Image (tube, rainbow, N blue to C red):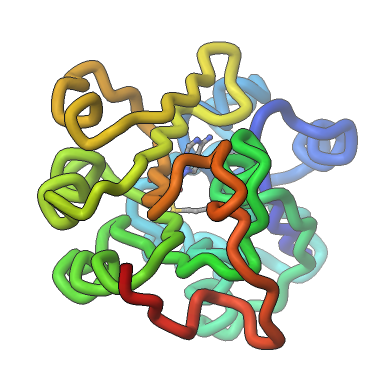
Length: 219
Ligand SMILES: C[S@@+](CC[C@H](N)C(=O)[O-])C[C@H]1O[C@@H](n2cnc3c(N)ncnc32)[C@H](O)[C@@H]1O
């Protein structure tokens, strides 16, 4: 049985218990370290393909735990694992973007959600300019500086949400000029790009039947 746990902040009691008697635990180093997973039972991600091969070699009776950052079904590992023919049980968690929107008390049903993480940034960067409320997963190569360049001169407000759920979590609400001056950006982080400052009632946006910022709004 393979169980995929979402993880953001601190591990749940259920995750701790599952890890304690799992034959194999797959996850990022910081998550495995936080759970004190012994070397002989851990697979550090990295690329998911080698981990999937090991999971495929397990017998059905062995317990395996896969730890995913944020929600495992939102730009997470479950798609690849299931596409490889493996059955999983999923224990969800909040996504990093939910936490970022919560930090500035903004509804996100009308937000366009974008992943720059490991993806070609061009299509996403283009979409940024056409929407009033965008939440972006970043990576070490494409993050706040590239996002600010792509939206230069539009008067956007940027919310830089770093290391959500960790002791050193930081939320910064920045104008374009302020965002350009930031050099000490911690990983992982997400960025919200807003047409209005989060304290402006206009930033609340509109509730529509179809979620996901599908209606581009020129500003
Ligand atoms: C492969 S994506 C996984 C997204 C994840 N499934 C989620 O629901 O948030 C990895 C990206 O998620 C974001 N992320 C994950 N954990 C984070 C955290 N604790 N704080 C800020 N951003 C985080 C970062 O943009 C990171 O590069």
